[in-house]
Image 1 (cartoon, one colour):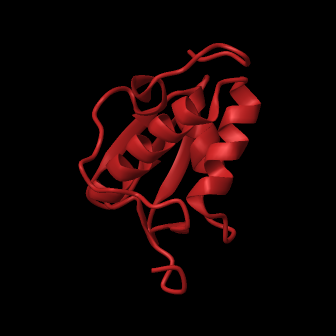
Image 2 (image 1 turned 180 degrees about the vertical axis):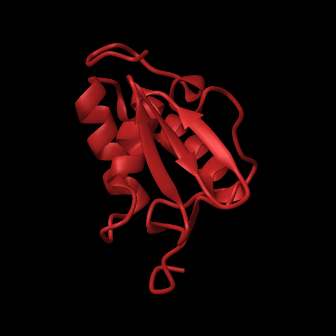
Length: 114
């Protein structure tokens, strides 16, 4: 589990994995329709009709920031501040995690942000 102020890595957000897709700073991810969230202790389970994905505290925090018109750069800034890590590390973690969520169909692009 990642605690406040503890350095985090890509595996902290998503439990490993990562994506090859390049996620831009101005991209505004949206939660896909049909994705449900269930909490179990410090982890959450993201569920769709065809997939399920367990994420820890860091992943849950990033998930809470997805939607609402936030750009990736705003999510990165919030993660860097929340976990007291440098922006470059937060950028790596957030973009890797969002790439994984995109590949698995849990998020999609905001049609207005591209």
